Amino acid sequence: MSIAKPYESASGASNWRMRKFIADFGVYIALAVLLLAATVLTPKLFEVNTIAVVMRQASQLGIVAIGQTMILLVAGLDLSIGGIFLMTSIVVADVTNGRDEMVLPAILIALALGALIGAGNGVLVTKRRVPPFVATLGMLVLVKGATQAYTKGVPGGFVPDVLGIVNQSWFVLSIPLLLWLGLNAFFIFVLRRTSYGRKVYAVGSNIEAARLSGISVDVIRISVYILGSCLAVASGVVLTGYVGYVDRFIGTGLELDSIAAAIVGGTAFVGGRGGLLGTIAGVLIIQLLSTMALLMGLDIEVQFIIKGLVILGAVTLYSLAETES
Image (cartoon, rainbow, N blue to C red; front, top):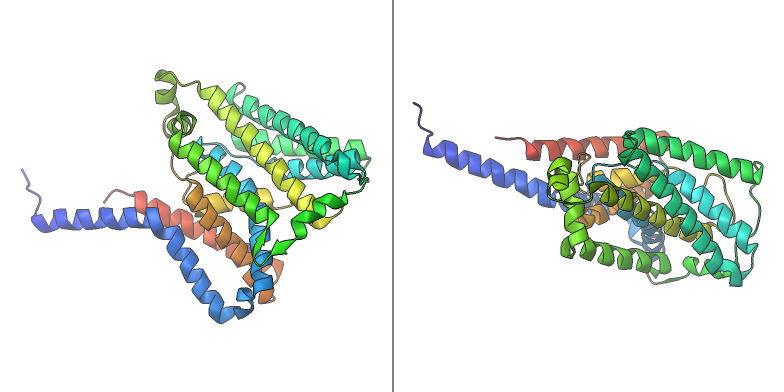
């Protein structure tokens, strides 16, 4: 019978502390390092006007990333966000046709349609056992096809002037940033302090154990897809007001960026681990990388390579942090 040596136990404890440190604080250290690098590579990033633009764009991504994080926490995935953005933009422009008094009805209609799309995703995943990637990709194609058929390929209508308020900023504060911060505060409370939040983590950690403990697993999973879609609608309204017109390419890529932000922030693809504080840092990292690449004049292909390397690096670090010594 072999006996563990004292130095082996100390080494194991040290490795465990290092892994825990990486898992808990790695994303914040990465954000700090990125900001330090920006002071040398792109000092213009720290000008007030640039910071305001970065934070506004981070807010648009961040609102979507809240929903994406919650979906990932139950071991799901949502690729239909691009279609929801397009649908939201078309509904807002078509229903309001430039009339400020019709903004609220237009938003309510968009939210109802978004909730329907989210419920469809959830039902496909839970009741029909369709893999989340396939279900939400299929929903993306369906929604984009429906919007193309509705508009006959030519989106119309006018964005009401009142939505232009999202373009206003006070120093670095703006309506999108305040909305993002408020939604984060609310959903952080929900995830950490309510029974619903505990059920979300339980379902993501072990779906069978959650079911045996009496949790309505399908209800929880469908609900997070609905929440994710509604948050995508909210971000779509903000982005439509920011752009000021209907664009069939609106929000393109945000679904992948939102997944990247959540993963970089420490949320696991397999569910049950992660949270919104990490996602906030992940959103800032993704947005800072994009802005720095633009300021440095890098081609779009190089930007994709950088983002890919960052995601792979984050996944590798978190995997190493979970590896048994």
